[in-house]
Length: 255
Image 1 (cartoon, rainbow, N blue to C red):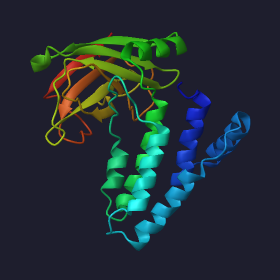
Image 2 (image 1 turned 60 degrees about the vertical axis):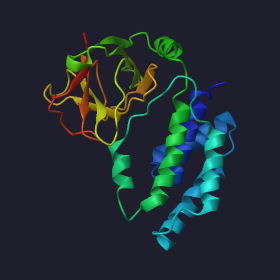
Image 3 (image 1 turned 180 degrees about the horizontal axis):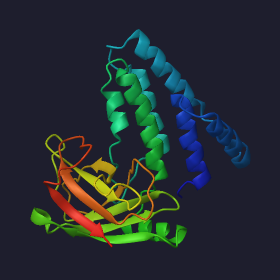
């Protein structure tokens, strides 16, 4: 059984509190959700974040303690990782910047791992057809477009679904070759008519596994969107780029 929306939101806020980045409004929302749902606070997330912070100060150059690593694994097992159809989670550049900061080290990486596990739980591990049906049932004005392969990627195909009301969506992709993330990564770009046409919105960087099956890629838009007109996939340098030169176009979905 998939967790309810309120439980998903509660877990997201709880992870945010553990990382110390909740606003006052989000703190109130967390308290209200706990009262309404009768959910007991998961102190492990907060205790674990505190222990990570202390350890990072005392032993920045030391490897992660075995006991703490075991606790992370137990927490991952409790949250549950996706199964079934592959779900590829786009990289968030802000996370990468944090991980590359030597003053934070593995402590921040572990804290981010906790948050990413909660986010994975929010994106239910559903087969592509069922995931699409669920999003359609939640938004009658859902934007749906089909991808067409371009240039050397003629075999690429798929579908993109986007909800303006929920500001969320995903792609179902097939026929896109697996990539070596050390050499290149795929990146989504979104053309929004309310924004500069020459500066499409970054929709996230992702990889394609070498198993040949369809993959579901949640859209990680960096900005709010309003009736996007086109979705473009390019192949870029590892980690993605701020502005694509469009030298390696992979697929296009438009009106």
